[in-house]
Image (tube, rainbow, N blue to C red; front, top):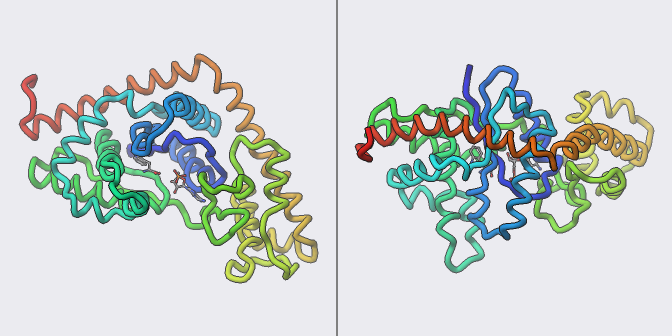
Length: 329
Ligand code: AMP
Ligand code: TRP
């Protein structure tokens, strides 16, 4: 069995793009692998957060993980800061990293661009991410392709350390990148990705949106004036995005959907798509509401942290030993 590790930040507004592009794969991977799914709260504070909101978001994301079908009897689900090994290993890896390679990270460059002096946490973000992954002797990391550079850095750091401190120090992980078909675009501007932070709330469908919000968002979605249903990303990108969402959610090939709606208007397609989304999100929303305020959720996270910590402690011990750190071995 391979070990899988992935993390998601505890921010609100988890949307259809996150779900279809990433989270759904987390559920599938549980079948044949030993999976560890983390809520990366320490990554979240690289940008200042209101403590009460952060607390709430951690529990929201945890409940959503379970609601979409992550099974705590099969997989480990936990909160990053509950396991001290992440911070410990992060420092050890920091000492094997170079400021040059960290300044080349696209995400850092983008996020620090507008500021005169960038927060150090933003700069160190990829090292903490490498620690997350290496701490669990991870084989596979399922992430969006925007994370490719961070995974490559993790591999570079692991190989560098192994070369210097022993080949048994780290397992070299591999990224598993989501299919580009699952790239969901914004509903009001199909040239950009559906995103958590876009100002227009109708540009995305959030997993916990009400039926009327889902309907409104889809009915308002930008299309074109061609009026013919076909899959043409270049000339009819809005329509192509809707067909893509339809296809990914129903698992029907796009060509079949195009045929089905041949001669019908965009309105009919949108109306049906809204219904399909409302129906497929309903069970997730129901189970989310059942779990979110239960004591069960806290127990699952505590249990997850304990299991994660048992693995992490072994790795930290091995790494410290290889580095010659500490006095308790
Ligand atoms: P983020 O929302 O940027 O924190 O991303 C969380 C995960 O969802 C990452 O693995 C992203 O690659 C993925 N993701 C984010 N937005 C989209 C989108 N519009 N379509 C597909 N995947 C996405
Ligand atoms: N950086 C990732 C993202 O923004 C989140 C993350 C943090 C992560 N640590 C990780 C993903 C470890 C995979 C493995 O999506």
